[in-house]
Length: 165
Image (tube, rainbow, N blue to C red; front, side):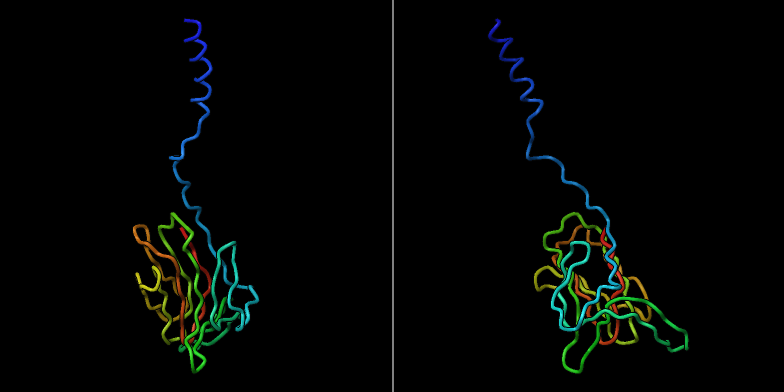
């Protein structure tokens, strides 16, 4: 009987202290990636913002001020994405190791040309939206989607921020 009680008292703390590999995953903590003031140059092929990795094809940092079609001034800071006569430039946010994202909001400027925001799984387009004219948010519900990158491309536009929730 003493041996039995001794075994219970010895194994009880071990049972209470043991860790399972089935611990619940932590929820994704929302973050806004501000794309202003990064000092990105056209020949930079990659950069990071708050630990998130981006690839870059021809985009660059710029304080932007322009007149729209109604002669209203539009001011913002961000990454200018444009067409150089040969290639459509873009940035890509790499999301292949990020879990728990349910919504992506991209603030972009479209100067009246084609500015596309696209989410991918590998080389397959999961969803693509054309940004409306001027500064607008492009929103994706990605809760039940498998994605590994977000691409912003434009003939004449800019990326201002990306919010991941």
